[in-house]
Length: 389
Image (cartoon, rainbow, N blue to C red):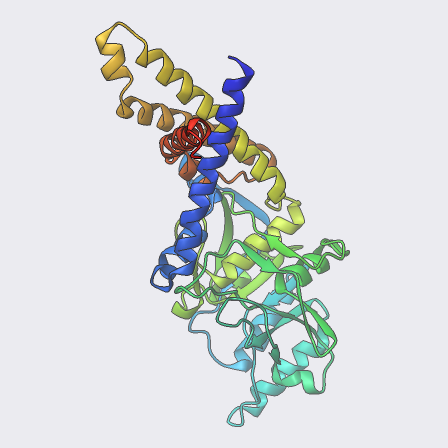
């Protein structure tokens, strides 16, 4: 292929990106399309990768984390007794996905018992909530921390457990903030504080970014409070999470295609940090270069396909093989191969290559070629236009 053809294909590829970008700008600018825009932006190719993984592989059982389901578990005195029972089996860390707001005036004994446990053990991490955490655009704004009642007179380990939410219903939980700063005080998120306690060091290496959670197939042991003492092997040397697995307001969409309880997402996040298997997103410039190369290669294939079929003396080749339907089949095949290769890369190295906008741009290759030819005809007409005296 001559270098002139390669230059032409590069220009057509660029035009296809420009056309795609034009429609993206329209979608962002028109308010009535905002729900559609957020839905599309909330999609990631990791959703496809996780779907394949969960359908084709057997989940491994986590040897680090157990979850105690505290759904319908009432009474702070009972919580104190539950924590004492768990502590008797020597867990490495306990984190509680619940905030004990304000004293219970009708149960001072329960408050006292819970406060005594909080003071007695140093391996318990209590939750705090951040109110007004996000504005209407989903951006971090002013923070108002809500603490458990005993923090007014006890020094305990705390971490926030808020789940970021988007504008449209509820956003997909792919990442969790590492920390938040309120009045010059930095608070770790629950997953970071718990992972740090278990590892005995800062597993985030001082980063202030988001933890990109790895949802590869994994099962966590789930125990009811009444069964805790019957399974010491699920607590000895482990991280124990206490949370509600069934509360409707704490169910969040996850990339595995189903809703998970907040405490389960915390478990995946902690496991991600401890296994050092955080999802890696290539820099934007790398994604753009790879996307352009894919479009350029497809444009070259399209050009070869059109030239071969258009000049063929075989009518079946010229009108059937050269039809847009066959080209769409080629696009589907190449897209499938691309997704398969990306899935292998993700499953081996946790590198997530996102091809959403790239594959969408492929739909505009024919339009971009027609635009290129129209521009060429326009320039040619302007060049040979006779000069008017």
